[in-house]
Length: 174
Image (cartoon, rainbow, N blue to C red; front, side, top):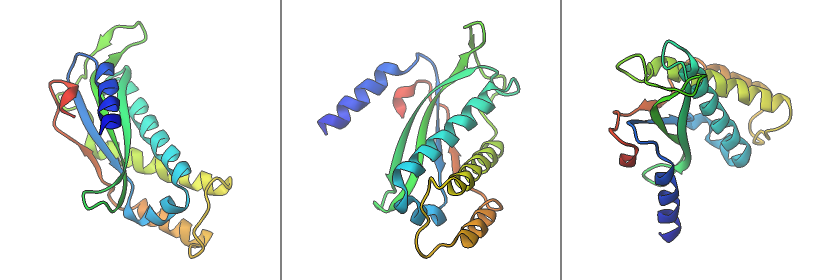
């Protein structure tokens, strides 16, 4: 508990004095076996996809048009302590423009959930395909490259669990 509290204190000290948004990016459970065989590589791909999505969307003038500030944390379990890899993101309600000025979002809602989900899904699926092609991921013995490709195609057609929670007046609520 002491290590956890120490980590929380460090994260609190990094929070900006503004409202924050809590976002959760979850990989589909169909990828859990791949996760078990490639924990570190899958975690890197997951963090990279989330980071890329947030930088792209929040850098877009339609949403924020600035460099966002956010903290990410990986959770690999669900409430029942089953395997459930997901990333929690605490994103500031604003960011810095090219001149270093603070910019607030242009819309009343932070990001469109559907766009966020589709971009995350596309980026992570593309990263998984590339990682397999480059030999950066090991496929489980019961999953051939052909079946893996079919699985990724199937996952590209279904809704993924990306959650945008209610805006917090401050970041400490998360």
